[in-house]
Image (cartoon, rainbow, N blue to C red; front, side, top):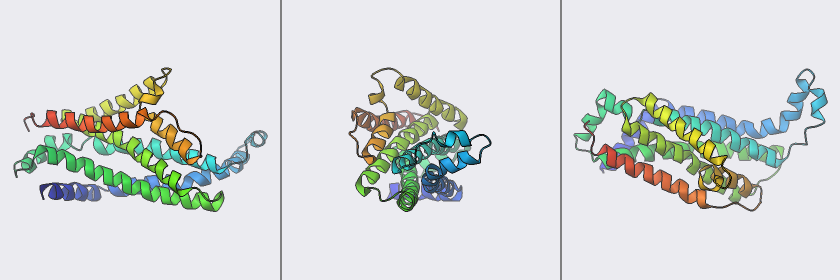
Length: 252
């Protein structure tokens, strides 16, 4: 019952602060526009002064181009939203004294953190589902039918990829009372993953491999090493466990 109450509080806050609306609008917009962008790239290039000479060099857009554009847009803007939404999830409540009031109910600190992760998971799952529907519809209209099962698998991997950054941001927000420090530390994780991915042989051990495999799945190709999947799950669970261990000892 306490978890349900905490979850309702978190979800209501996401609605009142317009975070749910923002996530839905941004991801759905890019979900629907990605196939259109892929389809119209040659036409757009032709409108650019001097671009006519490059139009003949651009291959005819295919269904794979639409999917690649969708994955690129959703992951880039999804990670940005994960960092923005998660940076103040705990830090702001500690700073304003809201956390102390809620925890004095009493509310277990594990439930307090779990409700935040659950609410953000639902937010991104809902937004990504709507974005996927938009992408699937416009891809069908412009390019033809996509295999539905690989498409669902692709979006599931994208969701897990985003949750890695949600969990890290909530974790860093737990460590500090300043949301901007949490944002900076989370962005540092993005940079670290980018550096590690450039090291030969290491790309299969970071969450970025989820996006690679998501692309390969929906395009009907053989996937790469799945070690990154288990690493990603471990990062989500591990960051939440450490966040709880730290949070339960903090003076609020």
